[in-house]
Length: 200
Ligand SMILES: Cc1cc2nc3c(=O)[nH]c(=O)nc-3n(C[C@H](O)[C@H](O)[C@H](O)COP(=O)(O)O)c2cc1C
Image (cartoon, protein in one colour):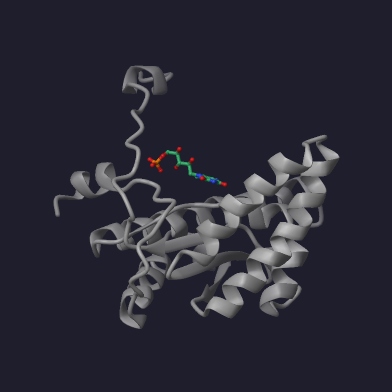
């Protein structure tokens, strides 16, 4: 596939056919992530791979409990909360594989001042995004697809507990992977002249 076709063709997929992915397909996605750029080349990310129905259900239930609490705090009614949870649950348990990229800061530089420390952490988060983009492109290049769910960011403790992850790992996203159940929505993009704000 032409590289620009790969970049333009990748789209978020939110519903999957039930066919499983092979271990090799998933490893190719993770291998692509491994080659992402990162601050000082330290690769401040780790990946939890979830493929069993039991683990997917446990993850969804743990996140759902926290999400329901947060939606209630926002004043959403019970029916809306239940509908939103059901949709999210189906997205997670219906995906043949789910990858949870976690931020891992232990190998980064330490600074005495909070400003530089915050910048170091931001760089790590930026590179986690690079790693996820590589994963999404690698999935698409292999004929399947993925999406990005930000939910773990809002309930990191629940995700860690559900997957038995160390406290040093900060779950940042959830990437369901599989064969698209239907053609994804192909959102347009802003034109370049709106995005480029300076060019001297
Ligand atoms: C940091 C980040 C968080 C996102 N969180 C979600 C999410 O929680 N749920 C969701 O359905 N899509 C999520 N998305 C996907 C975006 O909605 C999607 O990329 C965007 O609408 C463009 O569509 P496309 O990926 O199909 O090109 C997220 C994307 C990014 C980069």
